[in-house]
Length: 415
Image (tube, rainbow, N blue to C red; front, side):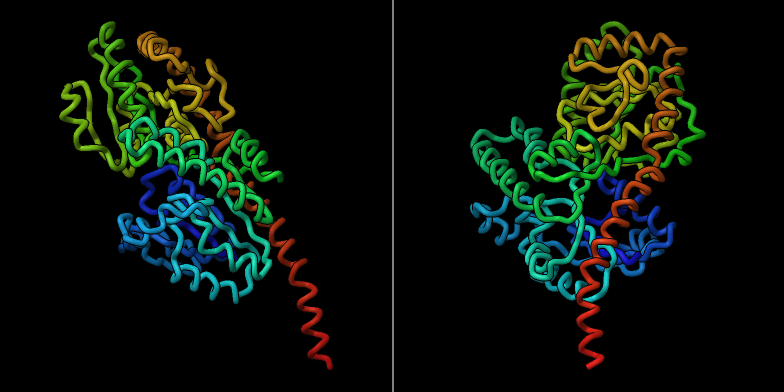
């Protein structure tokens, strides 16, 4: 199939769960022989490393620059009722709209739009031409925006509440338009179905299980691992909760426990604020396997959710036992006590860590169960097959839409 795939970011390097998802699905669909044109609006310029990673997977890679976050246009448009801020920042882009319209002159089996916040430049052209297309929504922004609300200055919180209201209206507008809708979990699919009034497909988040299959965690190391993208408020809040509340309780029982923290966009101020030799500040690690080999368990005290957590799946695929919250495994059909250990209370999480670090046999049991769960339910091959099924239905709709036009053209030619 010929696929036109749009993204509001470059999917390389894989510094976030969304980028990891896009890269692996692109790779899997390319391996299945599909011809993909990727249209990207990016705040980061395309460099040689990203080009080398992406171009072998694609028929065409088209990258347009996104205007800076603090552009006067963003500030001037911020009061507009029609669009929330993320739609403004990623939209109102004439060059992107024009390039998309040019591409629509070509025949496509599948048109795939990622994220409702990127939809604004494409809306009018898709409505005018009446072409079938799919939209994939990773999480409902009107809900996940709450992760940042309490972190904002008091004077900004009313605007944040206003913007979340705008986003709910935008979601209601956008999610009712596509031919096919895709969510990353059953839970998200239910929420999106409530807004759209339409059935929603699920294409799960995944993990490259073969990549992690030979990792053997250091179960006696007393070392916890957290990995996340710190551009997201949920990850910032998780680290603050861990270091202010949970880890001090763990250290009262076991002072030897260490916490390794890795991820993109880590705040420089953290190392000064929590100046403790038992905390390791590692930054972004493109390959987590060596770090996983030196860790005893994966700890993710997340209190805000949306989509499902790729880093938790990567930990499971590597055989790391996982301790997390209900929000941490949201979107995953994992069972507490079987595939991971969890609680939403800080003191209970501290107790689980203390107890589990003294039970290597239990850690090994959880690690094996998590690895099996990841391979059976969330390998990228599973996700790619789910996406390809959606593409096949969309291609059929596209062919049905094109058939009357083709007949009319043939009729005129015969005359």
